[in-house]
Image (cartoon, rainbow, N blue to C red; front, side, top):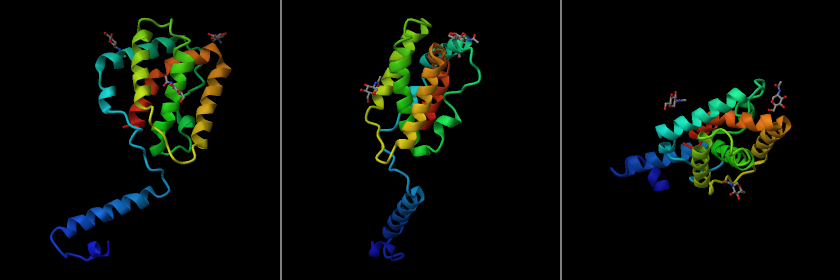
Length: 179
Ligand SMILES: *[C@@H]1O[C@H](CO)[C@@H](O)[C@H](O)[C@H]1NC(C)=O
Ligand SMILES: *[C@@H]1O[C@H](CO)[C@@H](O)[C@H](O)[C@H]1NC(C)=O
Ligand SMILES: *[C@@H]1O[C@H](CO)[C@@H](O)[C@H](O)[C@H]1NC(C)=O
């Protein structure tokens, strides 16, 4: 390391030292941030398929027409409160899991034909995130996810409809958080 920092000691050392410093800069800038797990990632191509994107948005639209509660937004500022960028994919993984297991499966007979196409798509994304973990304390993340779950439970069936009505937001949040 000491050798690397000696300026201009060879033509190779310059760039090498520069990239070393850049790395260190990135580390310290990330500061206390968690090392972002490479498993917390979804390829952009997952979100660039016109057909399934259309189906997802159509499903959300149809459900949101049946959602009679316009005061509550599930996937919004409150969900991301105090969750930094590097943790958001992990957060969205939890929301996706809840959506699949506790909302879409129980409601799977409704909103056809969209539902039967969108569920396997979301299940594949969920599967691709199965190794996504964070090493640090995740209490703040679990708290926000729990708030969302509690809100849905409190709204009863209309809560489930609302989750489906926000599948477009889920889609975009996954795309943004897991890129
Ligand atoms: C989805 O595609 C249909 C035509 O197949 C179109 O009428 C509709 O507007 C599209 N919806 C969205 C949300 O892109
Ligand atoms: C949801 O999470 C549980 C616990 O981690 C896991 O066993 C299950 O397979 C997940 N479900 C989906 C649909 O990803
Ligand atoms: C909203 O929908 C729920 C369930 O679908 C129903 O129980 C409730 O009465 C509805 N509320 C209003 C204000 O229409």
